Length: 309
Image (tube, rainbow, N blue to C red; front, side, top):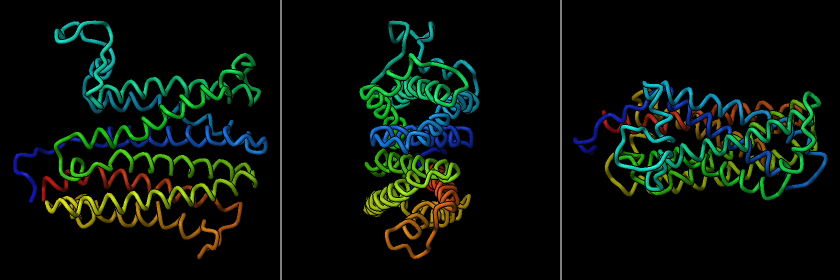
C-alpha cells in the first residue's frame, strides 16, 4: 500500500513538457552525432537538417521550468548563487549530490553544443556563412563531448524522479537507463521523419534499422523495469500499468507500449508484419514520438496515481 506520509509530488504539465522536450532535443542531437560518426557523405544532409532541432527546443525548456517554479528567479538560482543563501560561497551554484542542480548545468552546457550544431547547420544551408566553425563542429572530440552531455540530459529526468521519495519513481534503479533509451528512441524517430521527408533513401534505410534496434533495447529495459517494480509489492506496479486515474494505464499500454515500441518492432523488423515502404516512414516516426510522449506522461503521473490510490 502507498505510504501515508507521502505527499502529492506536485508535478504539473509545464515540467512534464519541459523534460519531454529536453529528452527529444538530446535524442535528436545524439542521432545527429551518430550520423556524423558513421562518416557516410550520403547521410550528411540529414544530419545538418537534424541539427536545426535541438537548440530551439532547449530554449523553450527554461521558460517552462520558470513557469513551473512560479517565480522567475528560482531557475537562475539553480545555477547562480543567491546572495541571500549563506550556506555556500562563490558565484556559481554546483552541488554534485543534487540531480536538480547538476542536471540544470548539464542542460545549459548541452545548449552550448546545440548552438554550435545549429550554427553549423545554418552554414551548410547557405543562409549564413560560418566557415571557421566547421573544424570545430565536426571535430570528433567536440562531437563526443556533445554526445556525453546529450546522454546526461536524456537520463536526467529519470535520475531526478528516482531520488524523490515517491512510489514508482523511487522504487527502481533503472529509471535513468530507461529514460536514456526513451530519449534515444525519440531522437531516431525524429531523424527518420526528417530523412523520409527529404527523400533520403539511404539514410532512411539505416535509420529504420537503428529505430528497430533502439525499440528492442528499450523494450528489454522496460521489462526489467516492470519486473523490478513488481518485486516491491507496494502497489507501484499497479499505479503505472493498471490505474485509470488520469488515464495513466491507457497512456502506458496504448501509447508507450503500443505506439512507441510495438509499432517500430512490427513495422521495421527485417521481416516486418506490416510493410512500410520508404516514403511512408515519417508516419512511423510520428507514432513513435506520440508513444514516447505517452510514456513520459504515464511515468510522471503514475506517482500521483500511487499517492491517491
